[in-house]
Figure 1 (cartoon, helix red, strand yellow):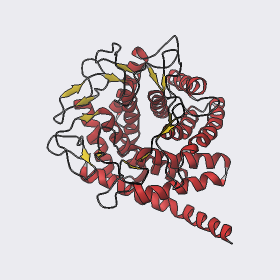
Figure 2 (spheres, helix red, strand yellow):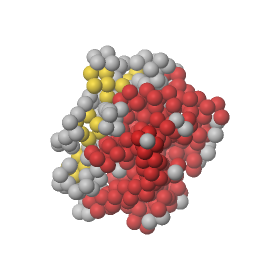
Figure 3 (tube, one colour):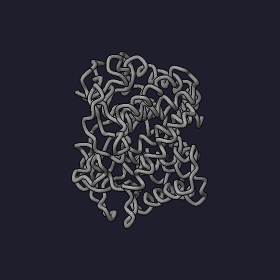
Length: 404
């Protein structure tokens, strides 16, 4: 009877999930609508801390603003609310006026709270999010200039960042597109020419652009990027993703990122499907299941996904950050769609229960940055910040609602 009871409970939770996700999407969007707008200085605030305290003088990053633009463009496509389109337009205008380099092209890394350039270097990761966001805003608004900008930034990456000899793209450039000695995306990253993270968000951006600009060369680039993942980035034995690489694709790290694994599992498949290429789709579906199984090594008993593990040192980072939990829900649903194996359905529901129990700030709104091994909130983190954005959690809701 207990097995039957569990099955009934799972099905009831599964039936309830779409309504709960719709409500949570509304909560996430509502938080950003209420708190994120920088009324005195334009655009959006650069930082609100975990106690919901505004840091009005914080820098503003191109990645955060591009993710806001994508989120509210995609939300408008989902719910048709004028408020979402208005916030997307606010982000669009701010990016064009303050974060776009009028002389050298592309996006600055950051500006100060008044919109003056702070770091003008061209991180390929940031350019990719610009392309991703502008493509989505074009879908939402039909503003031809948004599509023009996305195509323009794609052209810059193809002109400056391509490694014609070894394949793929080099990560970082100075403001005038000369190579940088320090290519790190953040202080925690390795200083290497090529990273999984940049390539993942490049293929995501190019795939989104292809949906509104079906250019043949762009399609070839998407397929090239998918091949790079299959050939160089996905470990053939463990099915985890390598994170850091030399110019000739030699792995420079043993660290496993469970969040990036589960994100890539479904996202690479989605990118392959955007091209319509049957061979690429078949490979991506096979990889999706294998990568999802590998990522599940990082699942805790409470349904949360641990952050990172280094098998060489046998060291687990005992933290559960907000964004891997969001990506896990989509990854598990995608694996369930492909296999109909109930283990993935249970994993998704476990992930959602963990999010409801530990990630949601039920007092101030939005999601906490993360928790430690004892489910204590990680101190000193952001609610809105350079890396804390509405993209992962809102996208998880939108993607699952679309699939349901």
